[in-house]
Image (tube, rainbow, N blue to C red):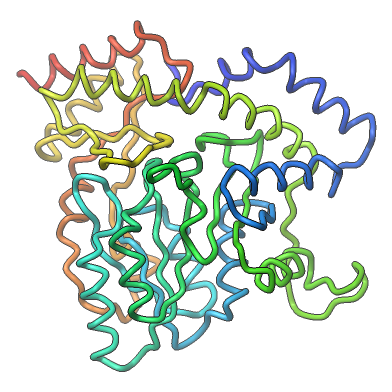
Length: 376
C-alpha cells in the first residue's frame, strides 16, 4: 500500500504526461518555455488573483515573499508552531525573528487568540517590530481567515499565506492562496498538486510586489538577464515540471480534488467512533494534503503505527515536535507564548494513507487495524 500513490496517478495520466514531456524535449526549451507562462496564467485564474509567479520550490517562494517586503533583522514575524520547518526557517534566514503561535486542536491551524496574545506580548516587550503573520493552510484546510484577517489589519501587519499544503482548499468558494497579501504554494510531488521534482509558486494582486519577485527570482534581473539591478537568487520552475503540472492540474480540477474528499469523508464515517478525526469547519473545503487523526496519548499512537507497519500499511507523524523545540531555534530569544496544544498534539498525531486513487479495500484494511488496536 502506498501512502500517497504517485505510481497509480502516473499510470492513469501517463498517456498525457509522456507526450507533454516529449514536447519539451523535442522543443529543447527547458528553461522558461511557453508551458511555464501558460501554467502561471492558469493557476492565477484558478486561485482568483492577478499574478502567479512560479519558482524552484515552496521554500524559495516563502523567501521571495519575505524579501519583497524587506523583512529582516529587528522584525517579528508570527508563525504557527505546528508546521513544517520551512515556515519559520525562511523568516530566520532573512534575519528576522519568528514568533511561534499555538494552534487549534480541531483543525491544526493557527489559533487566532494565541496570535493576538503573541502580538501584544511583542509590542509590550518593545524589542522587535511586528511586521508580518505567516499562516499555514495545514493538511489542506485553509486557516480561519475570518478571525485572523481582522487581527492582521488591526495591527497593520502583512499576511503571508503559506499554502504549500492547502492548494485547492477554499472558504465559501474563495480559494486558498488568495487570502494573503502574498501567498505561496509548493509543488513537491506529494502535495495536493505536485510535480515530478521540486517546484513552487507565489500569488498576489499587488503589481509592484509581483514585478519585484519576478526580478528577485532571476538574479535581480532588470530589463534583460545581464542587467542586474538588485541581489536576487536563481529560482525558476523548469519547463518539464511545468508541462507535468499542466496535465496534473487538469486532473486535479476534474476529479482528484473531489475524489480525495470522498476518501476523507469515508475515513470520517468509519473511524469517527474510535479516534479523533480531523475537523473541517463549516463552509471550508480541504484539499487533504494529509489525513491526520489524534490518538489518546503517545503510547496508543505509537502502538497504532507499529500495528499498521506490521500489516504493510504506511503512516507518518506530522509533526513529532513543535517549531520551538527544534535545535536550530535553540538560541532564539523566544517570546514566551503558551504552546501547550502543539506540545500535546505532537505526541498524539498520526497521518494515514490518503490519495484520490485509494480503493475502498485498502481503506478498509487501514480502518480494521486501527479499530482492532484502539479497542484493546
